[in-house]
Length: 234
Image (cartoon, rainbow, N blue to C red):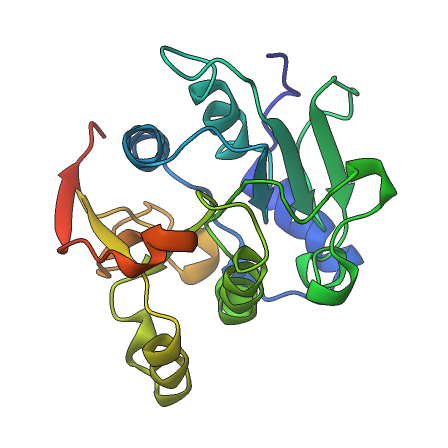
């Protein structure tokens, strides 16, 4: 699938800062091997969704391969792909089956105004919501996504790339008690989200452990997998 030329992190950050009041520490990219691990996990555990929704999509590097993943092997139907980001770096070409929404996630994807008419979204659709969320908005994005699953077809899921100690705060811990995740897969080797804006020009690890956290709906929401580790090819 054709994509625009990759922009530098500096160019992306400058554009974002000029147009949106965001935290510069929210600017980071998802390593390819982390996405490959997600690709494998989703194909193992999930039925084909009607929509793959990449929130905080950037250039769509998570959403594009996930959409393609469900058109391989026993998965025959290509789901629609929805990309949402206030500062996108995806190409602007219109492609059948791909819907691009430029705007803040919390405004574009709120529970009371979920989606727009272009999406033709209905409550019975099966959703796969995925994100490596901007840290400053991560909690609200997780909350809204998990709440949305309750009204969808069984087999829907929300999957977020988060720090392993992310739920240690009192507020998040209380929410997690009422909304436990179903699977937590640690990523090895440890990904780094440190960049030049964090006084780290060489991109060394930020020393946090990360994992893909899964929330399911329907009967699957009652099944809790043991914590595991997946090793990717960096």
